[in-house]
Length: 480
Ligand code: NAD
Image 1 (cartoon, rainbow, N blue to C red):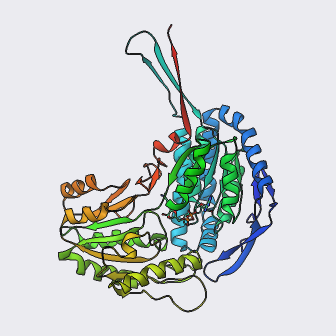
Image 2: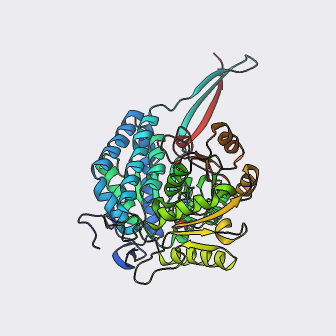
Image 3: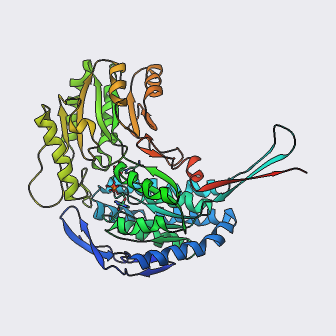
């Protein structure tokens, strides 16, 4: 597949398109494994230029009237919606997701700009009387400063806008480093923000396939005051260690091992519908993807059969093909990882009801797979699969489901299906996760706080909380 005309393929520093001082790297089409184009590999002097631009732009951007910052974000939202088809096609091309998923992502991603254009003008402070009555306590909010934003490949637009929106609303300037698999969408976002009026230096994008070589020095640089990362728990842990040296303010959106609980009084049609969304959106490559289906014994086989029927009917193909419902995985490495977990689980005694075998031919494809009789300690039940694999584990009752669900160091998203709201809420209250879909297979919403507990993250994106991550509080003690 060829790149749409006009797609930027250079980095964006200080309002200018730029090559990289460390060479270039290839962007691949996951449907074929072939090269789409190459983009620059940023070197340390490019990092220096980007940080200088962001630091120089920072004071004026922070001092700009909130309404002016909000208008830039609002125009960005409108331009993204106007250019939805082009952005969706580009994501389907470089990441492999279906066009349906890609269009949904553009709408979701754009919405962060609209939401944070509305939040930008509502940042408040406080005035209180000290309990002793001796003085007043006055608080005001300031932007943290230059923010380094690191994003994964699975939602190339939304993971970036979920950070850029609140950062710009708060008055921060940013350097975005997208995943090397999906740099093109990030470059298009820089173009749209510029078209919408973001001044030079406010948004910079550095591309590289050697992230560690760039991010380590960035976190050691005194111009960087904020790190916002979305990606694996493993890399998040490493970055927190690096951020510790300079106590860089850090937000982390990390991996999950999300339980999908179906109780015996659930509406099974609704549960299967929810499971299709929670499992198959983005081919299962979502941090919010249901990773383990914990289904009460009496309905487990019926649920498994219905889910397998639905998953087997999905049409697999290139994301850019309008008929495709399940695109390729992002890379060969991703397919190898999924196949390895499925193979180990089958060797441990699970049965593949559908799928479980990689297809022949080119591209990074893995078929929709349902596994039954899954041992509780098997690979797919204990590790994030990040692919179209649904392991079904029968549980005795809600206590058994909760014990199994909570026996994980990860706690991002959970799903609960029950015909009784009281029972469902009782389970929700005890589930150790940051987000729950109760009789719903989708939790992501720009107006809601997104994030995890335990080793799934620190902080929240979206909602009223999202902008807080980019603000600091200063307090003045005074009396008059
Ligand atoms: P990843 O951790 O490999 O990469 C994420 C980002 O970190 C990329 O930009 C990558 O280039 C960069 N990176 C990788 N190694 C680095 C290093 N040593 N130093 C600095 N930067 C480095 O994750 P991924 O494979 O791109 O994404 C999948 C993971 O992201 C899954 O675990 C998924 O659950 C998680 N995720 C979480 C959320 C959330 O909101 N909690 C959302 C989407 C994805």
